[in-house]
Amino acid sequence: MPDQSPHRIVFANEKGGTGKSTTAVHVAVALAYRGARVAALDLDSRQRTMHRYFENRAETEERRGIHLPSARCDVFGGGEADEFDSVLERLGEGMDFIVIDTPGRDDPLARHAATGADTLVTPLNDSFVDFDLIGQVDAETFKVRRLSFYAELIWETRKTRALERRQEIDWVVVRNRTGHVEARNMQRIERALTELSKRAGFRVAKGLSERVIYRELFPSGLTLLDKGHLGELGTSHLVARQELRSLVAGLHLPETTRRSPELELA
Image (cartoon, rainbow, N blue to C red; front, side):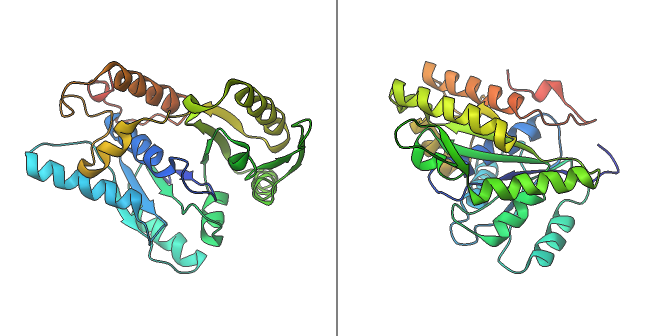
């Protein structure tokens, strides 16, 4: 993608605790393993989870004397939308992708970032508490009653882009932590998501299960992709790696001219 603006991948969810930052870091590193040049911007200047993850990763590289594919990460300390756009332009210069992690709360700047996405990723836990972010369901039938304000915002933005003949937002709702959901409730959520996806225009992808390994990796900044640096992996970790591969493939992100097959996750 030479001589083009970087592809913007925005991870946005106005509720916390959905694995958003962990997913964002793993996708960014997966792209780096492909040979892509990746920048990252953390909009949560209070928690800085994504930025801290990449800081830990850099410290592990220095401590062990190793090289790990990574992303150049910065934190946006706050300001207006035009300031954010300027920082994004500077950070994305010469990059193939820029991954933006937004706060897990209602935030005007996060909404602005979402409307500027090429790929918008909304991780959800498989619960109707999280589902409420994008739509409301009937308490008896579990049928979708209406879109949320957030879903309406993205819908209107997609329509505006289409009229302007610009690239539409590819909105992907990622179902994280599905492993601990009761089967009947999971089926209800699946039916509701399918119905809502037709009305709001998003795709649904399976995300990352709830696994202790993700919390254990944070202090070192390592990811499931860093074979050879993780020690022996159990079966559940290998399954988690396959989940990640499937997720990245499901995002349908553009290829880069610097693709490096030898770095690909085996």
